[in-house]
Length: 80
Image: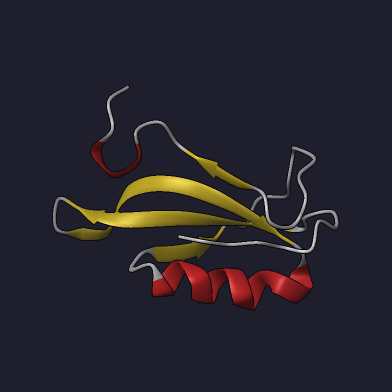
């Protein structure tokens, strides 16, 4: 997945899931941070990569910028 934001303060965290164990939301692989204006573009990039986006409802507790992507070490079957 490729996502490049504008670098402004993020207001939204979108969780990125891949299918696992027969579920579309089977594996939480990444978190994508975006401003409100670029949320639709980030979501489209996630879909284009064959992954499932989910807009996280909790407020951001970390300072991130639009375009920041955190990939979990265990993404798509990686080891812990």
